[in-house]
Length: 358
Image (cartoon, rainbow, N blue to C red; front, side, top):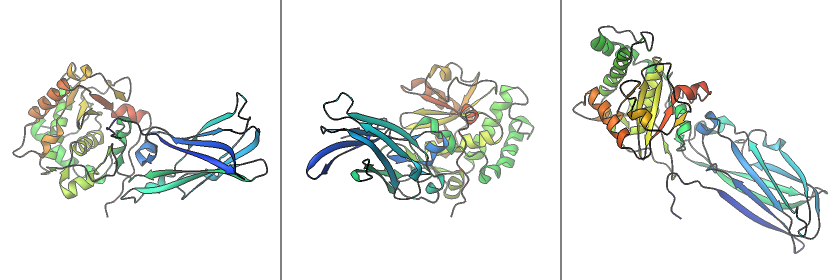
């Protein structure tokens, strides 16, 4: 089956258990909405890992007072041993011979630390009868993704904007120097002046500093997933001097947020570019916004959007040309989604923790 980037994967396993040759029942387990691949950004953006347990009694005997208990192949699931599901289900001829329950499971954040490739883990569920005998068993296989993996959901992108990364703070004096050339004053005042022109000059100063980093455009890091991608950290970009469009977008947003600006992320099919609100009193009504007219109608008055891949172009592309290119792409986009980073922060979607490169 061919899968595109937006298609939901649902993992299902069906097991028919047999005791003394007699069919006893069927247990259906499922992981919802791509959560057979688990990543740290899901935790940071408050996405829940859910397991749906189903039991259908196919016999002509009631199944009374059963327990479903769980175990996991490692400690990637927090306090899993404390989850016990109790219930009863009537015989097949009854109208209530089906049992279903969905549970939310907490993940251990430290399990993702240090992962550089996918790791497969197993969740096992045991069905026990009222005498404590095992009468059914089911396994689910889940994949833990490296910490730098983004699952493709727009709402989780702000976790990769690392506003306090030391490699970002080390650039601020250069942004101040660029601001001195553009505005005659090196102060990075964010919105204190209440002047959109000063805000836009700060955006231009960030663009100028990143241009001088001599970055080269490249493809995403290798991944085994059909959707999403691995994202380079700020320090990794500066060390290796390569970045994708999404890498440069998040890097630009990281510096913007570090100096007190409110960035946005514009996502198109296969592409992304950053922007900044020119007024700190403005925001969208949701973290992920899907009305492109709010970009195309309000650009230059309320927003500054920038085609960040032009940071990797040589000879240098002027800042105004990069803004015009971003506006052109937004205007012609069929499916434009906009992530309001400041609004995400207000909802406690916080950056991933800083990790020193090995």
